[in-house]
Image (cartoon, rainbow over all chains, first blue to last red; front, side, top):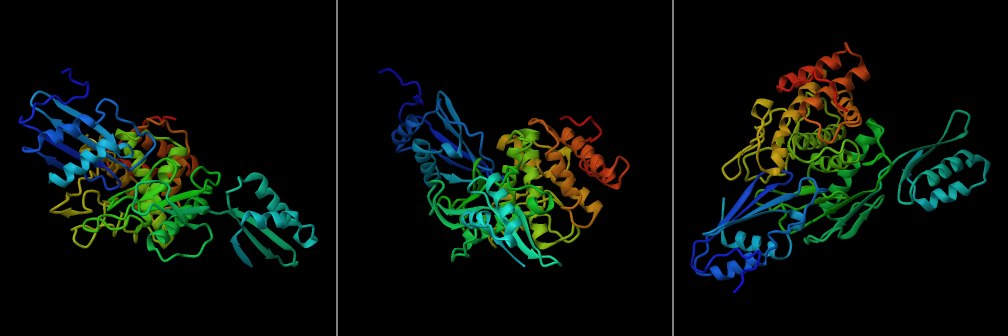
Length: 106
Length: 351
């Protein structure tokens, strides 16, 4: 089967970790969350595939808004995106919410 | 003497009046209606002089609208308090309304600036944005305030410095247009902190010696080991907490950091923040009178959007020299302020 352009490209069962770093904001205090899923990797991969890694919107108007750096560490590649708070919607928002709920905060 | 915010329908009535005793008031009201957009406000003061002639004075007035996002991230939300309306039961709404009023007052009464754009732009704010939202921001059109998570942060409307900071981003947007990255980004942030602090100082009539010079005082919950988010007097000392770490702001250029957050705009702002404090402290008295005036003059001096620290420093020296003279104590104070944070101010001001 042909791989989609934005397919993270990891076979189920391989090592996977997702890091979410929230920077910016009025306080300027960075926060990060990390998840290393094992049993439900295919669900996480579906979430990663749904995100538009190559088409993240820009926000040049806002000041003091959060910026979300999202890293998907896969065995053969690392996908990264820097998502302005104004564009943290749809699959990006679902992914970040899931990482915050399931991951470790530090 | 009475004073109040005059709604357009009343201005129209006054403007159409042909009563001889209202002649001046009618002219003034006509001017307001001609020069101002429909939503723009003015304050009309009527009084009698010694000869019992009616004196009408028009001054700038804010036009505030506060909306409630009801914990969603949909803007603008539902309007809950418009200009001139009485306080409501919701403290966040009233804090935003009052904070916008205090910010408008500083720029209007001290620097003669009529709102964000200098032309009476309405001031729009939204409160209760998002769920447990730990932030306040300016989105290019309005100020937006979260309620905080209740564990680390409380309401972001609770400090005039935050409201003033956000509105000043609008002023910078309409003036210097400093890009939001690296040194110009840190200057953009610092200018918001400077005037955010001055909003609080002006409202409380504090001097440079009695002001806290804290940004976001009271935003942290009691569980956090810290007094505020930033200190202009002593950058790097605002908090030291097991969960948040230590306030990482540098106080001098030798400790400038390159990091996330657009190159560390909220960290490196500590350097020009402290320079402003040093200038204000040396000049004494009310900081908005001289130090604030110099910074405001600089903002309007034709800065390039990519101005760096040294370029801004030189521009502040030029602004002080233009207003107070080359050999003035004010110029000496500005130079000393920048020297105190390790930034050269002797370059040609780049405009």
